[in-house]
Amino acid sequence: MTGILARLTWWQRVVLGLILAAGAAVLALDVLSAPSTYGAVGVLVCGLLPSAALFTRTLTTYAVAGVATASIAFTVVCAALLPGKLDNTFGFFELIGIACLSVRTLQAFGAWRATWLCALLGLAATVLPLRLDALEPGWMASMGVTIALVLAFVLLLGLVMRLHDRGRTDAFQLARQAQRLEYARDLHDFVAHHVTAIVVQAQAARFATGEGRLPDPAVLDKMLDGIERAGSQALTSMRGMVDVLRDGTAPTRPQQALSLMVNDLATSFAGAPVTTSVDPALASLDLPATTVDAARHVVQEALTNVLRHATRVTGVRISARTDGKELEISVTNDGQAGGTSLPRGGFGLVGLAERVESAGGSLRAGPTSRGWAVTALLPSSAA
Image (cartoon, rainbow, N blue to C red; front, top):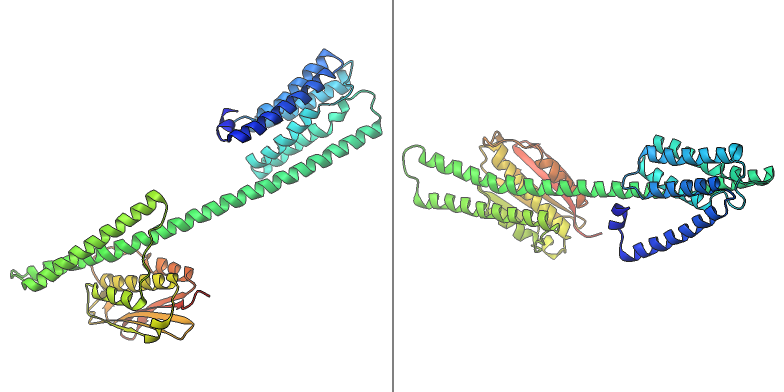
C-alpha cells in the first residue's frame, strides 16, 4: 500500500480514497446481509483478500492463487455445508476485487502463468451465485454466464493495457538503443579524428628528431601547433559529450555552409595535401541541416581513415556536386593499405553508414584503381 501511494499525486489519492470508501460501504452491506455469523465472516474475509493482494508492492503467484482458492472454498462451504446460505448478495465487492486482480495478474506475469491464474480467478467469480439461497437453477445459470461475460470483457481490457505497456516498453528500449548508438558514433568521431591527428603529428615530430638532427623550427612549430589544435578540439568535443550525458540535451551546432565546412576540414588535415572541388550550384541550395551534418561526418571519417589505414598517400581529393535532387560528396586518396600503428576499431564505416542512412542517403566505400574512395549520396532538399 505504501509503495502505491508514494507514486500517486494528491488528486489520485483523493479519488482512491473515495473508491475505497464506496467499496467499504458495499462490503459492509454484503456482511450485514449475511444471515449467519459464519457467512458474514466468510464474506468479509473473501472480500478483503483481493484488495490486500491488489495493494501489495509485488504481486506473487501464491497471493493470486490463495485469493481464488479461498473464494472457491467459501463458495463450496456455502453451497454444501453452511446451514443458512446468503440471502441478498453473493459478495459484490469480492467480484469487483477479483476482476481488478485479474487485470493486474495479466500485467504482472508472463503469458502461461497469467493464463492459469486468470482461469482460476474466473472460476472463483463464475461460481459466486452458488452462495445464494432459494435461487432457481435458471437464474443461477444466467448469473454465472453474465459474470463470465463481464469478466471476459474486463480481461480484454487487461490485455489491451498489457499490450499498451509492452508497446511503451519496446519504444523506450528502442529509444535507448538509438541513443546509445548516437553516443557511440559521437564518441568514435571525436576520439578517432582528433586523437588520430595528435598521434600522427607526434609520430612525425619523433621521426623528424629521431635521426639526431634538429628539424626546421618552422616545421616543428607547425607540428606542435597541429597537436595543440587537435587536443583543444578533442577537449571541446569531450566537454560537449559530457554535457549531453549529464543534461540529456544535445548541443546545438551552428549551421555552416558546405563549402566552408569542406575547406575547414581540408585545412586542418594533418596528412597529405588536400584538394577540394565544390560545385558552385551548391551555394544557391538551402541544404537540410541533417545533410550538412552527415556530409561533415563523411569527410571527417574519410580523412581520419586516410591517417589510420593508408600509406604512401601523395594527395587527397574532396569533391561535392549536385544534380538538383541529391548531393554527392566523395573523398578519395591514392594511398595503399597500411597506416599507423593505432588499434583498429572496425566501427567507423558502420557508424558512418548509420548516420548517412538516418539522413535519407546512402554510402559506399571501397578501393579504386589508385587508392580508396568514400562516397555518400544525400538529399539536397528537406522533401
